[in-house]
Amino acid sequence: LRLAMDAHTTLAFAAGTILDTKSGRVVELQQRTRAGVQIWSADDAQPDAAWPDWQFDQHDLQNGVQDIAVAVSVSRPVQTDVRRFLQGRSDIGHLVCSDLSIGAAQNAVLNGAHADMLAERLANYIKHCRSIRGGATPPQVHLFISAPYTFSFFLGRHVKLLKPVVVYEFDFDGERNNSYEPSLTMSGR
Image 1 (cartoon, helix red, strand yellow):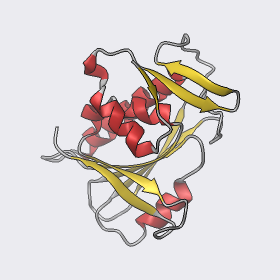
Image 2 (cartoon, one colour; image 1 turned 135 degrees about the vertical axis):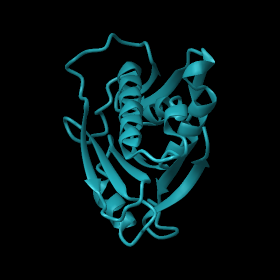
Image 3 (spheres, rainbow, N blue to C red; image 1 turned 45 degrees about the vertical axis):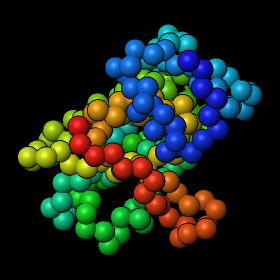
Image 4 (cartoon, rainbow, N blue to C red; image 1 turned 90 degrees about the horizontal axis):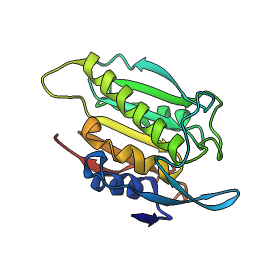
């Protein structure tokens, strides 16, 4: 399949949930880059140890709640806006800041294989964070993502590791509150 999506994070993530890793489908995505439109897929390059990788920083919000917010800074840094959004909220007890080793940049993701690698590693890290939080039911994950839609698509393919999950979109146009709004909620396993 080849998908051409000029879409927000939420729609790309949702498409990935439909074509998840168990679907057996090879998916190509048209990704806009500074070099023009490119075709990215999970196998478009050999993985390289020199590719930018994740640096994770965890913060306990000291309220005893198990839900986890994950700030994903790939294209642009989101930590400041996410922290502002979390102020005064009592339903999220843990913040994971996910930053690339080179910092956020529009060209930080190099190709589809890199996007797929980053998505898989992030999903596995979130699964690990959940396991150490324990509890009878898994903590809900709240995703705040600034990344190419190809990354969001590949992250959505790992939805089984992420559920229950809420994806948020930032109000860039200032039509609501210049902050985050929940845009997709997926419950259960």
